[in-house]
Length: 310
Ligand SMILES: Nc1ncnc2c1ncn2[C@@H]1O[C@H](COP(=O)(O)OP(=O)(O)OP(=O)(O)O)[C@@H](O)[C@H]1O
Image (tube, rainbow, N blue to C red):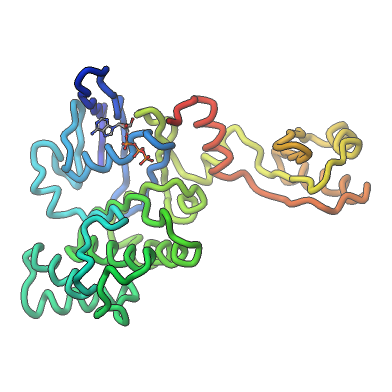
């Protein structure tokens, strides 16, 4: 997938145009899982809609699986699967199996081929015991599985997942993430939008952070997490200003007040971290948690400093 200089402007009668995408560049390697991150209004959904040929770009080049998405939308459509989540696209009165059979028919599959494809997909997504349940009776987590199953029925080469775990409880979210990592990753290219940065770290080999319609950063999540940032952090459970002062005088560390009464010590090497912990323990401070640089910290610094949230 290759996006160059992509711009999308929405005309709004009586009001100034809204530039949803502004000179966006995106390159995703075939067979990998790529995360699209960014605050509300960043342009993620607009970009997904253009990639899936639902929306035309205003200008720029969009190549999906070797085809021009604007000029040759049919070729793109036949090779992609989309899961937008929520209630959209599922028929509540039909059972899980009927929904999938219906989609198989729309894909042009018939008879034995449709039956076996649907059965296999239900098996892969843990839906076999729910096959006869009406979709309207399922919880959001199970509905999301049906969405994913529906999206892969046509054996797409590119799968676009728009916030696949949004609104799910932690157990259901983990089950969906497991399906993405165990069943989908590696079988096709996956483009996933999410606000859950831990999820992006777990599932994506590369991410693009968007803000205000532009690309703010792109790369491997673990590498981004450490860009211009501390490698390790120690958060103290209770204030200990005298100890923190002593520690910062003898070890390469910076102390940041992250919330009232909560101090975070930031280290840029594991040697400094070890020395810092030794100072804390020798002063009798045992209430602290050690963390590593996270994508979330990086994201909050990046997006916060640009003021690109809605
Ligand atoms: N049909 C439309 N008409 C006018 N403006 C639109 C339209 N669709 C999207 N926008 C605007 O384009 C910008 C990008 O919206 P988009 O939905 O792509 O953001 P997003 O990153 O997906 O946000 P979220 O995380 O909330 O889903 C927003 O300012 C939005 O208000």
